Length: 180
Image 1 (cartoon, one colour):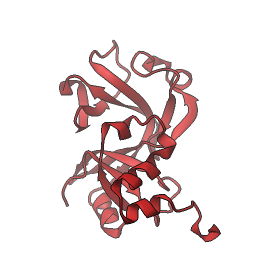
Image 2 (image 1 turned 180 degrees about the vertical axis):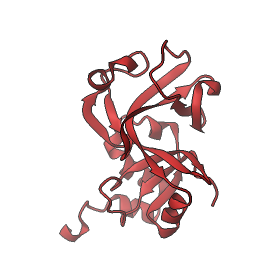
Image 3 (image 1 turned 30 degrees about the horizontal axis):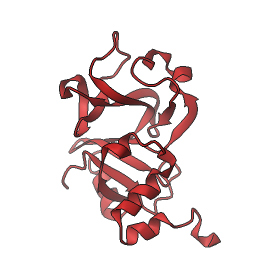
């Protein structure tokens, strides 16, 4: 399967795993060795200032810390827009990528926008490919407005609506269709 790097994984209606139900995941890395992504639409109730004050120079301290996925929930990943791609550990798409691990000793110049995530989504070799083939995930090209959405809780519905057709119908499904 072709790399899904820079794509959004939109949880399909049959994906009931509570870690990924109605999530939108940005694929940051996808190769033969596996895949790494960040859940874009799960803000926590904790601000960056409360949880990781060391990141206040990079990330607006009042913004929430996001739950990036169930893997390594104690690790922090910073998703950012870079002026220079060389400053990123991994580039996902356009000028969006992740900062190298660890808290920077000094402020990183050239970061236009940043968001902090605890944990990430991860897949072993071939695992994500199998989930996509099974229909667990709907693919859509990522846009800047997706990575740094002002209303992240609306992202799942917004991206499916943008995709159009039957996906727009799925976006309007109630959380529990049996209650309809």
